[in-house]
Image 1 (cartoon, rainbow, N blue to C red):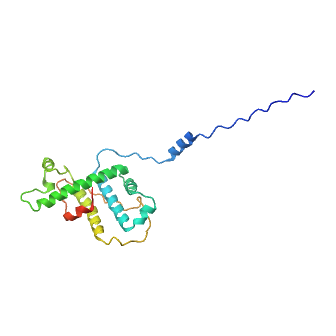
Image 2 (cartoon, rainbow, N blue to C red):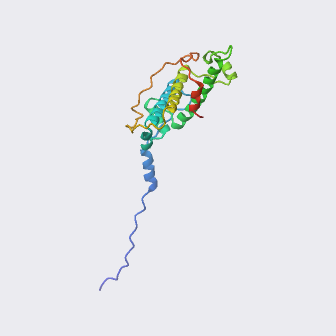
Image 3 (cartoon, rainbow, N blue to C red):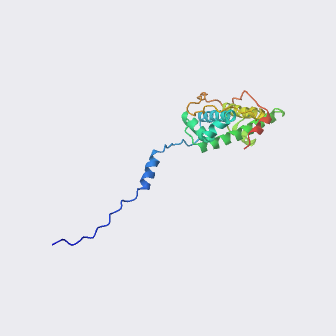
Length: 207
């Protein structure tokens, strides 16, 4: 006597792949950075200014290099700063540069105005409360002023050059291989900078 026919059982489908796990695993592979917080040191500030100067130079002389490589300006500046011991984010660098440029303009205009006035003290000979009364930054070091001045001067000179001049693409500037900024010892806030620039230069940077 034959056995009664059995009804075939439906095959159990395997569970769908876990996107959550894969996404979590992918997140673990992404590099993370622990950004420094708080006030900037003079060395961090000088590193940022060096990065901005180099980036401006390469964006001017090699306009297709960074853009073609997908390197945004402040991403590159952050990478440069990290490669040289300044552990700040691109947003921190951007905000710090805006503040530096704003302070530079105030000090520059004051220095220009005092040259035609009587009895006005040099910014670096003023006390903090005197600077605040004149709506000036409370403490801008001479080294920082000179470093920002170099960036502004370079932009001014580039703007006066023929804008139609184009340079062939060069090898991409690597943030990690860029020149290391020279370490400058902490300076006295009363040390006056050695250079001054024309008031027309201020127009090359717009806030």
